Length: 501
Image 1 (cartoon, rainbow, N blue to C red):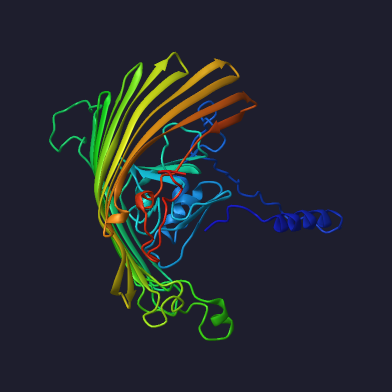
Image 2 (cartoon, rainbow, N blue to C red):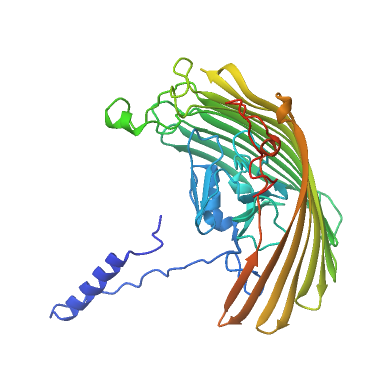
């Protein structure tokens, strides 16, 4: 592999050597021209388009140049985003972005071809965003935004958002096998069947402008990790996408499937490591583990006309998680231990329609409608010992529904100044049926979020931005109807007092 750069130390050394040799009487050695250093920037220049300095895009080439051990590390292509992990490789990562601890995705919205990755009212945490269903090689572009300045982004996007867009048709087929330390194994096969190509023996003398294809991918991944207790982490991912472009219309239908399970080590006490009781790669509870699956179907349609663009998409899916954890061991229950189980099972569906009008060369107006619905059956928290349930802390059936409308505009005032105002309104409906009737109920509410971006320039290929906006994330539906603490049995009030914070 050829080095892409020389370190400053090496460059200094070469310079000093050349200078020293010039002062001697011995013949100067033959000079060798160094290979050109090519620095590649972002996917494309967004000067004249971006509403803020924190809007960007990464293409497939940039993504594939980065090494990945954890699937969530794909998001580290976003400047300022840091990904960590705990409690097994199958669990959603911990996300951090420039001053925000996003937990598992509470304030950072992620979507893939229009389908939201985050889950609301999740068994493990609000906004839980597990990127395990994504096959990195199938990602064509990753668009990202930071801050609450964008009208098209609603719930769970206070700190920002990322949108994965998958290839409609792969530029070439892929067959890859990877083997690494700690029993890392990965296999991938992916390709596109070009349905628009002329069939053998066809008498067509001119190729059609229409394009269509069927793209498929299948991935298997196994990893034990460096831990004394083997991780036994394995995932199977499937991807199938039909794409058709005809005239001004494009259509796609995508099916995705993910199934994974893992063993984990959980957090361990530092004092036990310091005393020599366990190794720093050791563990205490040998039974904590997890398993998860997600199957979904997505469809999208676009029409590109001379004066406007139309878009519509939908998604429907089924998701399950069964997660066992043990953070405090025998602190609360010296007899049975503190292990607990979080279980989540749901159907989810929704979609978006929008229209974009072009007024002249640069002035635009976009109006859109988004909706999402989660039908959660038996979301539960249980006390367990060696993954066997001892008691139920709380079990609920939840229906959560949201609808949002937004409008954004781009007004080019003159050659060096443009304005991008935005306005968004979201309405929520929560219906909770709890195992304790006192914690059951339903709630409705709405929120309006104004946005404004002022862009100055460009001057010398540079723009300056002033942005302001309001954002929010919804609360767990169970927290909005609670009146009795399921652990202590004491009275409890709604979390935050609203459906969002």
